[in-house]
Figure 1: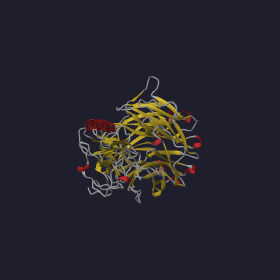
Figure 2: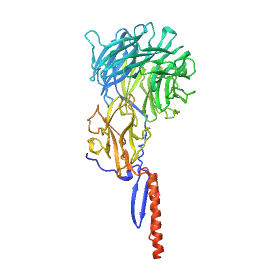
Figure 3: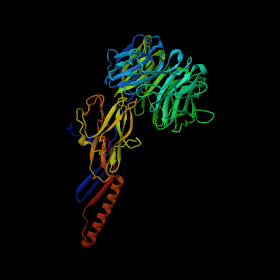
Figure 4: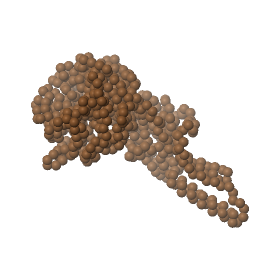
Length: 595
């Protein structure tokens, strides 16, 4: 691969130097720890990029997800409250196609508060409140080009199951994948004092749904509205919801891989409970998101319908901290139906229905320890007329899309820019950032803020890598099979720490500077580094330096060298009575950070 020039050493950010001098001749060994580039402006919200009115009649409670490449799907409650599916294109630059790709009426009998999920291949499912409020589930096919493929000549959907019968017993469902073909749905039950249920079902990869539910248990015996279900660890799951007396509530439950909802003991189903907001009627539309380790954040409508974020701890066994960690009122005028998303680092964005129903977007900071910012980073009113029930997702780099219910309750889609530090981060197995690696160590990499639900191939390449450079397999020092790793990002564009190189402990010491490249397999040119679609561990300095000698080994070596030389010089003095030859030794670390 042709490299585009060599950076001057003083332009690099480095730390650490060991220097030996003797008899007028010098030898230098440099240990380099490369620091990440400054994240100035992260969280800044740019202006609107593009927009599309995807339904000019009705577009209530839309749910937006990626299908493949630049194709996205929106499920919403449309004309006569029926459930509609529409597909659109959104480019990596934020440009939206002028018209929808395809549209179909999936739920002709009613499709309220839909929750859309990918099953396998081109098969998708939606849980929704159907006719008379029955809890309903349907599967259907969306091809990669956005075509909603009919199942047969008489119906669009593949299969259907009413997981709850009777009026209002499948309110506001939240569906999540458990394992294999097993899925769980948290929902309310209006006819039974608004109790909250967890129902498990089976959906095959071809879209076939089991004829009956696998299990159904009450997790909220007094009240449950607008539940949001999230996986914690192993068999443990958590539900944030509007509970008894409309208090903001959080419960943990256990759901086994076979779909069994396991009681915690003889008297209760749930493992633990926390009222994260004890003001009556102020735990509205909670959305829960994982922050780091055992820390989670919940965005919701609180006192006076203002927008709040609170952080809590949930352990892997389901134990919840006795109190919230921190609290922040992100929208002191109104913060209805919030949807929270990770941007990069400790920056998060919340799309919500603001003052006078304006579509609003704010960025805030949440540290890994759960500490919340005291002020918002930035604010954008993305629709000053109406912006209800927004659904926000990451598109590419700093581009995000929001589907929402706009003016006259029509369906709208807008793209905008949020400055991020989307990046690859070299790290250890625990995800802790690490930029220099010694013989015998393992090199891991994690991703933050890349394109959502996208496959990438990870390569190690000689530094520097520039736009248009070909990826050369021979440059990758990894000896694993395969040499390059393929990862898939989650809905936030992240992927966890992934092993990419085990450095041979007995290899000779050599000094190399490398870049780590994430080659997007669904956009741009595969095998070529494209700035617009791919990602690089650093755009201004080398990504990693490896292998480097261990510092303690250097100290021992230097100490031994001093003793040997002292012994040698002292011996010469005793034998020749001559003045010793000049010798000086220094070992120091500096904190230079570039120019």
